[in-house]
Image (tube, helix red, strand yellow):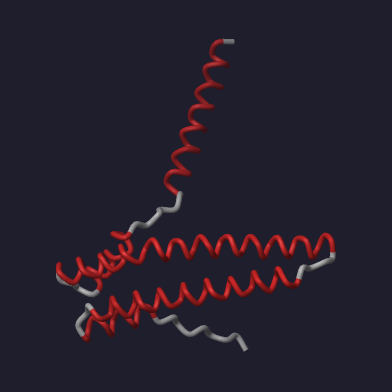
Length: 147
């Protein structure tokens, strides 16, 4: 009986160690401002002064952008609630939905404006060559049509 119990305990411990190791290894990293800006230092070959100024810009803007992201998540949850009520009860409060949609548009507009201001302020700290590379990196690649 003791060898069986020992083998089961050993298997349980090995499985637990594998589980914890796997999920610790695969978990998503939460980037800080150092991670967000560090690619620019190497890719754009920033001087220390440029890096410090750009890092300060991101430090000032980061909390506001994170707040917009939180507001957007709350708005998505509200839209899902509207959709759930529409599907289950077959009714929609159009006035509440319109207010929610207007709030979403305001958040999206403010979020976009703040992001554009951050990009413009960052580009203002760069040399013309660095600015061209930076803006190229931020330009979305065109999508290809299958047609």
